[in-house]
Length: 337
Ligand code: AHM
Ligand code: MG
Image (cartoon, rainbow, N blue to C red):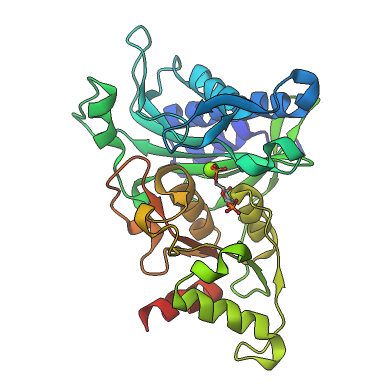
């Protein structure tokens, strides 16, 4: 059987199910091309002179790596001329990036974390790109980057597509257009993403959890209770032994959960309280929550379904608990007690 490239998959989704428009198909293809370019830059590593600090800070006050800046530029350059976008927003930019007037304007908004997993960039551990696509509301004010921020402040339920690329031993693109989750593997010789898995389903139960244990003393009571119960294993109230994994790249941790189940938590803690959480809603939590739900899992803050949050700010942070449904429901239930 002929290989199903990303382009072919998207055309089939468009033709047979009508779930996507031609413009959305084009947008996703361009994002996938940018991810290929990022994958090539990462692959060069020390040979390409791309490792190390860029010598600048992003809007969140975090030191930018050279590859953070390069990945952001690759995504901006690839997307601004195609005519499918009205504006883009990124973890690495304070304000939205408007499509320059010399290019045609489109109906979609794109948000991304160009290179997620900062602490893993220079140490040859999996990192990734996360992206989310929204429709630009009609009549939105795009006259200045400041004014354009309001157009992006839509709940995750409004996303029309979401995905991530993971740059690991293989480069994968994991995508949803609201019709299940599909996985594409980059064939480096062909320069194409090829469909390798469809209808990804996350098992409802798991024995694997992911959390940064170094923050234990800062967690709130419901997360303390849940992790203590998991650590108690067979003899404890959950009646089974758990294993722990923490890559510290959200894309890699989420991809493990997509592959074999598990629960990922970056919960609220006393250190993070003032900023609302660690992970960003618009380009980390929302796209991952859409993908996880589309694969049969669940995603909450502990108190609320992530996709239902009405964003107040572009760079808003939220607590994130996602993965195997029964485990996410359990710890979310502990927050209600
Ligand atoms: P980044 O976008 O600056 O890379 O931060 C997000 C990352 C996630 O990929 C990961 O889950 C988390 O931060 C790791 O945090 P920690 O270093 O506290 O373990
Ligand atoms: Mg990130």
